[in-house]
Amino acid sequence: MCYINKDEQKALTQIKKKISTIQTDHIHSKGLTDTEAEIAAKVGLIDTEQMWWWKEDWQKGEREAENNIAKGEVTEALRLEIIRLKSREMPLLIFYHTWHFHSFSRQKYNIAVSIIPIR
Image (cartoon, rainbow, N blue to C red; front, side, top):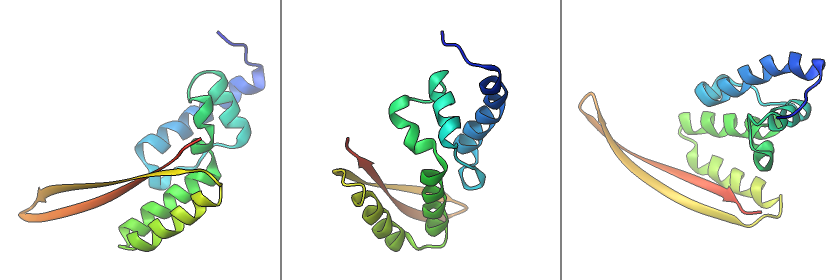
């Protein structure tokens, strides 16, 4: 169990809302501030090692990538994301995923790419 002060307790409600929105409505979400991420990690809402992913600067990139995918600009978005991650000077694991689904008699193939920085 950890101690959180009154200001942190007040902020916790907003932090929980932001985390929930990131998980359920990523395009319309807003990432955590540095302070919010620290509080969320302190109380166990997010993993301390993954605080970077929940912060607004990272979430902004996630939203941009989602919007680029929706606009059919996957290749350019992927290229820019790899450049951005490489600028952090971390080795990367890159996985390509394909799947097929059938919706309203139109078959569609999707390709997704997971880029995982290795620390």
